[in-house]
Image 1 (cartoon, rainbow, N blue to C red):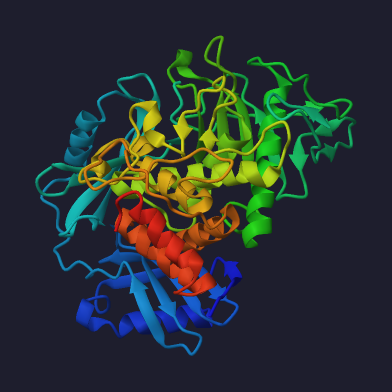
Image 2: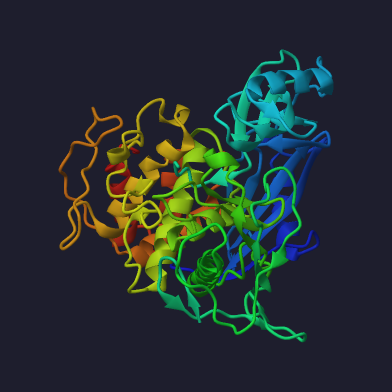
Length: 514
């Protein structure tokens, strides 16, 4: 039976659905999911139109956070348990560390490989991303990497051996090299705020009071520098001209936020990035560190988008619509599945942003920026930093799944899911569209096959992916588990034997995920 989400809201601990889910967890003693030392806090609740409930919990053990240990309880409308997602055995291990936090910080500093800007912070945790849970320190290190780019890294250090177990970055970037008159989408309508003192502020009171700020070249990576909402005297914003002081950067940023908000609201009933009605901020003209960081990023810490200054002539500011949708989707992912930004889950995190960024562009239906499956081609003068039709054309991204793909940079392993989504939505040989090569068993980075897979259309493909992300994926989901999550999501929406569900299976098989 098909279902649609009827409720998606941050849950209260005493919500009846949360209590029912906790009861299911308490009954799972055989898996060591309950008992002394085990604690769960609700993060998200989705109730389907048919009454089925999906409750996402963060997990703690002996009052320590469990990295990669979140669990989703899926219950039928009758209240009976359907299944548990990511219900690996909860750790049974001692919580006395051999190393102290200062030793962990020393190990993390050495692994960081750059200049540390702020005092590192170490938190004892349980690392549950591998086959065997380990006691570890989650060390937060903020500074400049060896290549000159700013970073806020999580470096996970074994609390006994001092070995680095994992690392990822909280700056989820677009990985580029590198009415208002916008830079990329022509003249657009902006919702602004009339000021009592005269003039107007670039504040959208219809979308959570989102504000667009000008950082005027300030460093936005190791703090939250003071900035003010952009203002204008006559409510006619920008000239459509590039520049590190251009008002048009703010026009594109405001338009990108508004369109992304409307996309999630219209398609999925989601009220903002965290589904709580907050608009947050978009900040333009941040320091690009002398050209070392020409980029855009979402930051959960300030609940804001940041766009750096241009990096010399040739490339434009990274405020294009698909980049805005990409980056803000990192915020959606953080507030739902929480895909950890390393390994295969990191590749899925990046692909999720590419997929939704492309769909935001399609949703806008703007003649000045026709929909495609290229990410960031406008500011990069037609050379996208990601091509979803055949990711390997950039020389680094993977078209196909192969053993070890999770060990490459997440911006390149993302190609597996990007490629899958294009084939799912459009097909491998769409009429009137570019063909996408499929993967043969022997293929690794580059696809060489010519099999025909029929697409199901971008609307159904997007609905399936979003439900998989918000209902079935967890922080540690890999590509095989993403396939299973999308099959479950499609079965919920369209039926297990539907053309859509068969299309999901075929699209994943076309990238060697079976």
